[in-house]
Length: 234
Image 1 (cartoon, helix red, strand yellow):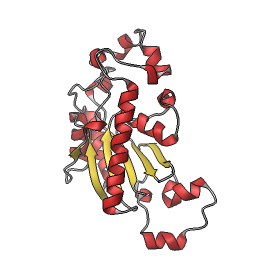
Image 2: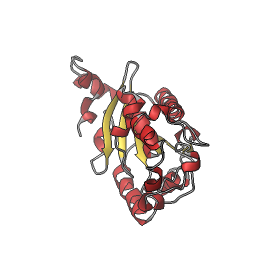
Image 3: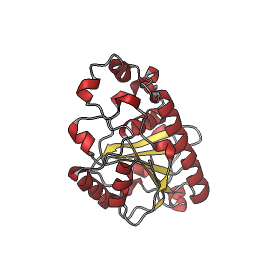
């Protein structure tokens, strides 16, 4: 089972101003650029076999700063939710819209005016990462580590799927700017190994070589043993 690292882009000018960026070409602010550089220090040395990204500039800027030696592959399935006419609006104003409580409490029913539904966003994002994970595992083996850079709601939807919870609960999940979340997919179930990590050591997320892991493995008497392993701590 390969290890997927989900990286949210650094803070943007819209994040700082309290606006809903959506698919607009907003860029990282000074804080976001510092966050991207800092997460790059944490990612340095990890044997990433693939790096994919949302096509939006804030994700590409994050990777340019965090992993300057890497040329990421653009994955359209990781693009931000299409918020339609809500894009560019202040969140304080949007909070007064009749659709706002639906987005917060029943997001699986939310369809943004002239935009995308949250359910459609979740479905295409989950499909994208699962397809990539299967490809990475097939090409590089179960010890492979790969990274996908995307957006808050997209990452939260992927995490909800990994946890086996309904999309209507995804607003309880947090994905801060420049945070790292780790998931391992197995034939039977995914395992959420780390969530919204903004400062921990990422090296333990790299699985040990297969032979070493087989010698150290104990009988699988729990899901934690099967899915967590040495990298589950933290």
